Image 1 (spheres, rainbow, N blue to C red):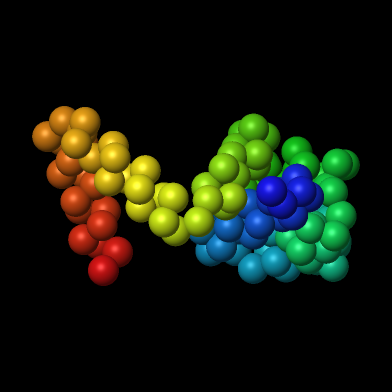
Image 2: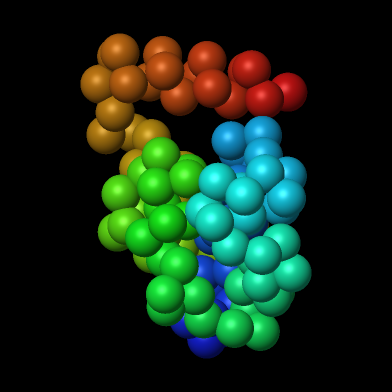
Length: 105
């Protein structure tokens, strides 16, 4: 398992890109140096003092920064999980999953 610094860095980068932000934009919004953000995203440093500011800049709750279980999973594990759980979906949820997958292709 990757260490928490690396996973947290990957998660911050994932959320930053999801929000369409550059490192420079997030760093400015979080009031930290862009170089510091780069070190955080690479897993070189742990952003203990700037965690709350990063979460605020990303418009998420602090706990959401630590939602990185999916970053540890490999592709086959995720496919197996989806296939094993799709049978239990109700009609509306199944339609939602279908639309998401179709939109991604």
